[in-house]
Image (cartoon, rainbow over all chains, first blue to last red):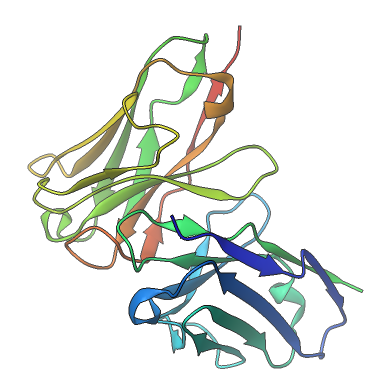
Length: 108
Length: 121
């Protein structure tokens, strides 16, 4: 099983600032099959990024993903008030999917 | 409208059983793999099980293997999760999710709103 470790656990920033979230895998993720999701309180997760760097339909271009192998990141270039939420990475390079434990992005 | 609607959750005693359903609409259900993902109260996402579009490829998390059974009825556009020998640690909101591909092992571009399962005496 591939273990995904996200850091930091909580990130406190202000609107307009840049956010960088990290996701590290315990072994290389095949074909960079790494996705990112956003989850707001009381809502289902929403797909942001797939294939490490491809934005899903309708996702603003302030969201970007990068990385390969075992180290991946999600960057939000300029935080909007609606971006404060919990973010999860997911690897789908193996049939047994795994998620990271999440990073909470909170308003400073 | 493209959507997934889960049902079947509820309160069950330890050792009991429940069957969850997920009704799909707005897309060709038989073209896509489907999965169950759960979230314990205040916790993160945990993948539970996945089933390919034809039903030939099935995968389970170690935490539920031997107790849970995933299945689908493509004619009814419905995904199921039969849960037996339930434990307190199975308490969670269970999401149905649509895989992007037909085979298992994908990202999820459509999620339901979840159905809550509570295992308690």
